[in-house]
Length: 106
Image (cartoon, rainbow, N blue to C red; front, side):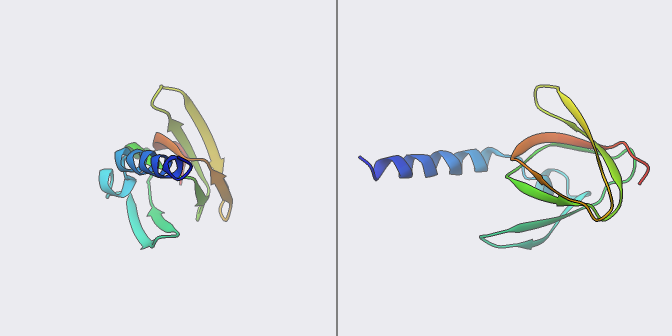
């Protein structure tokens, strides 16, 4: 029975991951995979002011801002959160599903 629980948990995790909307697939105009292996995936994300990505999902991840930016995140329940990143800033973000809109000037 103890071996059964991890298998069920891994199966549930795999199902959750398979149902997540991959940003590189739903919005290839803004998201490009530049590195991917079993340990890490790196996305190059480029949005002009006013650009908005459709609903998509991420596992736990790090955001590294190349430029200063202000982004508006909208969750599936409609709640919003606006975040400003400075150039060179690295930030941890928990797994999430959202749309993201560049509401800044860069």
